[in-house]
Amino acid sequence: MSDFKVVKFGGSSLADANQFKKAAEIVRADPDRRYVVASAPGKRFDDDTKITDMLYACYAKAAQGGNFEEDFAAIEKRYNDIICELGVELSLSAEFTKIKNAFAHMAGRDYAASRGEYLNGKVFAAYLGFEFIDPAMYIKFGENGVFDLEKTMSLLRPRLKECEHAVIPGFYGSMPNDTIKTFSRGGSDVTGSIVARAVHAKIYENWTDVSGFLICDPRIVDNPAPITTITYRELRELSYMGAGVLHEDSIFPVRTAGIPINIRNTNRPEDRGTMIVAESEEVSKYVITGIAGKKGMSVINIEKDMMNSEVGFGRNVLRSLEKNGLNFEHMPSGIDTMSVIVATDALKPVQKSVLDEIEFRVHPDHMDVEDDLALIAVVGRGMRKARGTAGRIFSALAHAKINVKMIDQGSSELNVIIGVSEEDFEAAIKAIYDIFVTTVTA
Ligand code: ASP
Image (cartoon, rainbow, N blue to C red; front, side):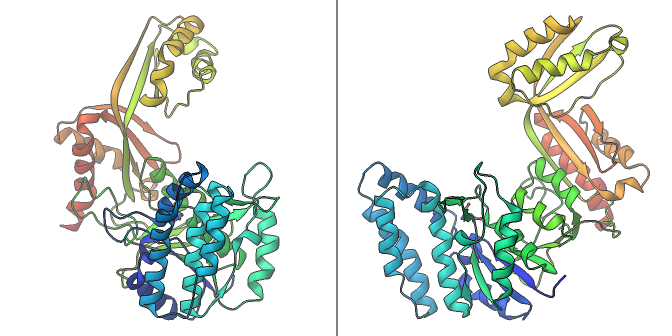
């Protein structure tokens, strides 16, 4: 492990000159912050448009043979304003001409979108006085479009070794034939993780506009407590349930190398943020680490006497889903009953065909579908040691007069998943938050 820190700044951290200044101050405050990954300028205010979205829209016009002058001029202006306000010695005119030309010659949607970070990387490198490294030459995807970690490491490692300070634009790399390819949206997080792995960083700092993860959604609970430390596995459970701050694919390059990720707030650099680590002995004082959930779930209830002694029953039910390309989320079961929980959106187009198939394969005594279900995951590595966690969850829900429709606890004892009616979703999260957090803090 080296002493280097890799710092990634998200779009809102580089949205205008003022944000650039804050980001640069953060980089300069610590000499270990040597490799910087930059996103494209994001929104400056709520109704603003991200550069990436402007580029997609502009390219869509160009690809249809339309006039995209005005759209492109608006993009140029965003960069020129930043350059001018920062007072950096840099002209992007030659770059703009080249990009415009490429747009007119169908350079591709990924190429178009990637120019947002490419240009921003140029600006940030000039402002910091760091070297600019174009990831097109070092971050590689395979023929199948899947990111190629091995190839990337073999190219990127030696390149970064020879340079003391660098800015690397996020979000893109290239295909074996050298055409530009982007990660999915928010992919600069992934670039940061790849760079951290390449230099064996001691930490990957991901600077954004929130001070890390919160125990639950602030739209549901007012001012929830922050999560100071979370393990990769807990984060995976929470993100799957819809708690998103970090791109999902940004975990694996650093996870295997044991590099922690620190989510920090560019607008409040004094906050510690959230530390994402492989393992942690430090248990949250609240026992639980986080609560997340999602609405829009349906449950297929299947009943049949003596189901438990019918070999292959479960397989036949799941086969019916598989044949219809339907993924299931959970499958709690009793002796003569089995419930399969699926996303409503995915179920509806194939519902009849799935039910017919189940009917045909297992001949249930009764079967029905219930919609409007919400799932809530209560996640925490501390649950393994604390007795009575499930009891506390259910008594909180009972007190709030919420009917629990389903319970599922993984054998890892890392999470408890609860199904409630959609209309109880917010109240249930509040009740669980209160029993674990408010009562401890108060
Ligand atoms: N600029 C890209 C996006 O808006 C990538 C990123 O910001 O991470 O999705």
